[in-house]
Length: 183
Image 1 (cartoon, rainbow, N blue to C red):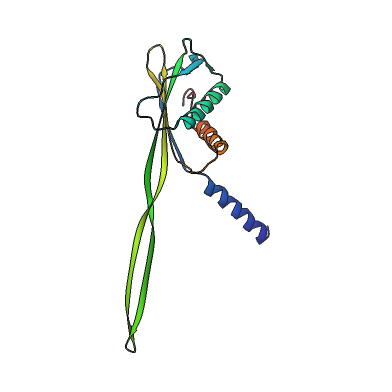
Image 2: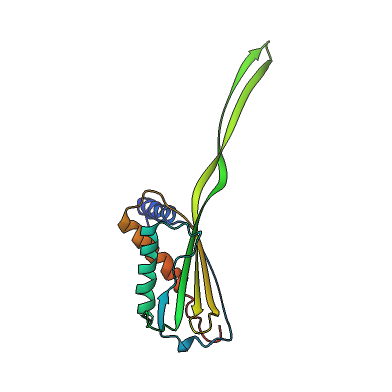
């Protein structure tokens, strides 16, 4: 491969990598429960303290509904097998800092100099979101599965870009639901 094509490919990979926010997914489940008996689901009301914006919450619920239905589950309000609750938390985190500084060197005599300088550091802040999804058995109220994902919140995304990102994030979260037998 010549240098020009290699450079274009490297630039493409770097742009793609820079556009992807880091995503952390964690999950836990009741290892004694038979998940194969679950067929239908519904949503619980949003818990108090939820910090998710209404439109974003609708997008997450829509993505969850679509992906659960693709896995063979049906949404119903009449005696569902399991209930889903979702809570979002937004926080500002500091990741490193940026620094600005300047110095001046003034010659003194024939072999020396005096340097004066100063600098200032400013923390880099970004918004992170954490989404917790709980799946409970409706009949017993027993927690069956818990998924937590955390990711950087990208500012200034169009509604279409937000939905595309949310679809990918929910797919990653639900990759582990239902748990595979013997896993």
